[in-house]
Length: 383
Image (cartoon, rainbow, N blue to C red; front, side, top):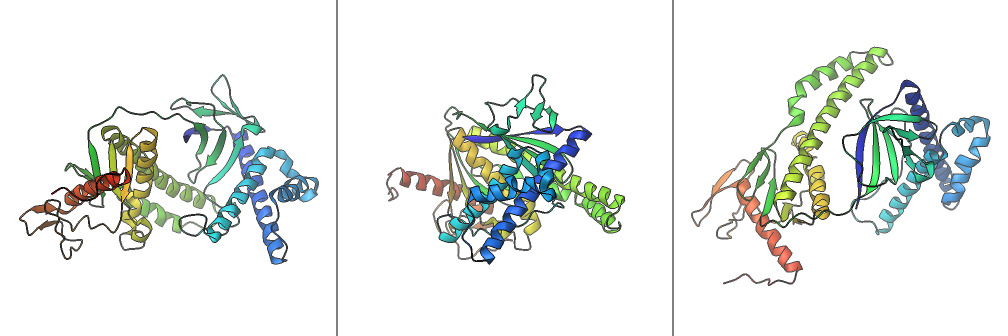
């Protein structure tokens, strides 16, 4: 399995200037390639092959006075920027032909120098390396100081240098990792995700929602108000933009750390994890959009999925149309209607249910049934 290992970088001022130059050159090559393909399409010409496009926007462009400065950065950075464009077009064509699953892919767009996030990628052809002193050696940039929080499990195949909206630099290594099966556990768990509680487990445990955005909302509002009063193009406005970005990154970092710790705990303690296949995109268009985005369900489920695969656990999603909340986990009766403000309800059999805990139990039962079905088990329930 391929995983990414991220580490904080601390480039010196000359190295920051070299990185800014590399970011700009990669952006220009991407935009030139996109412009060439759009012009060819408008003229009724066939789609430009990848090799012809590389020759036109990199090799020949370096010989012109307008693009001679492309030679100041590593050629691998420019080739990888063009590879991103080619991948975007392949995904677009696969989406239009129906061979790619999921929602439709939009055509690639021009990259702006005002984007909050800038990135360049070095492959093994660039001959990047980690020095004996623990620094990251990048071609035409130098030895950049790295804050190593852990070791790399294998030799990285590529490294992506990222500058985020808060002005921080990161190195993202792609490494090949071996599976690490955990000892078998007897427990299995169903998870009902929500907003009042981040997760309610089938064993009755309720995990409180951290609400990271809500904690800094007051400071974020003041920072945004101060930003709106600054004159565009001024130094004070740049400082205000950086302050707002730092608050947002603090929220996203805390949320990611929380998701990592909780997903690791659930995968370690349970042999199988079952969740509901939520339509997060649809929920993000409702009046609860801010709370849905703050919860970060998609990121959490993605972590559960890849950690289950790596550690030999079972992870499955239950159909979103399964009536987990309205189904009685004791007798199987389905309630006629259940608005969101109903947190507890009584079944005709006499059982009184907590809405979320009952849903988690039903998700666990449905996940087990689907798993037995896939393994060839009996479909008809026992008498």
